[in-house]
Length: 302
Image 1 (spheres, rainbow, N blue to C red):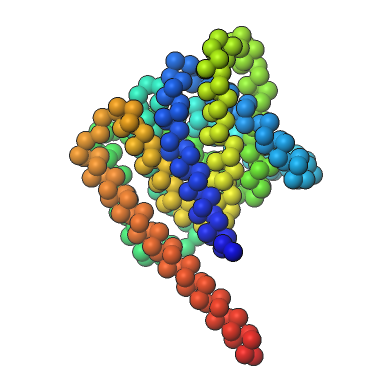
Image 2 (spheres, rainbow, N blue to C red; image 1 turned 180 degrees about the vertical axis):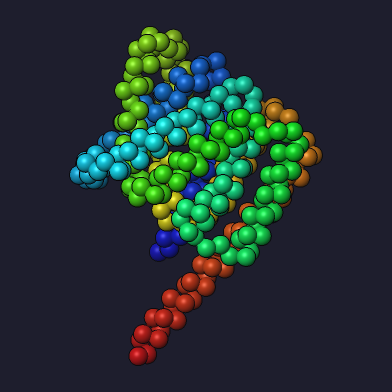
């Protein structure tokens, strides 16, 4: 059977790959206002999540969160953070700034590494600090070549970092947490749809299908991401998250956005850091397994 850490890694890889290729999908909806896309992205994620929650007997857990003022407040703030993140991300795609949005996600793991130490008091090994330093150099290089840190990058980084911290601290199961987030924002979504008279959804069947399909990039990967944050150290989540912006960058290239040698240097440094960090994770996991085997052996002997 897979270890808890292996399951967490598999979950975050699946989530980040899904998010990483999403620009190619949302580029097909560039003629639709970004907030309208976010509305449908959230709305069409609800039915399958509600059905799954009911079928798996999570009804009581759902109402437990509603009776807990602390957890319900946390869900309100996490909802605001993730909805803001989606809006800025889709807006960036529509104005041809997918690469800038991906840069924000490159900054995000560095913020997570800092938060993991300051907020969650996690310990970081020397090798992991070296990996973080290399990634920082890569990010700084890209930032210098940009000439500034654009507001899109900062917004993407801040909103997603806040979301990750809230969800990890709130200790709410992934499915129930995502369900609460979607339901909390639902009244505002319905009001907006009525206010715009249905928007593009009722104007073109192809757009309608694409808007519904956008839900595939919402609920499921979000549940996988939150599950990973529960099983992995927050710093580990941050480093593995580099898969997402890297694939977003590839998507930006496919969509025709410019990419020069300077950015290639920066991204190469970042991936060296990711590989180094992952090798350290493998070493730690192997050491933990060996210690566990040795402990069972000592117990059997005694």
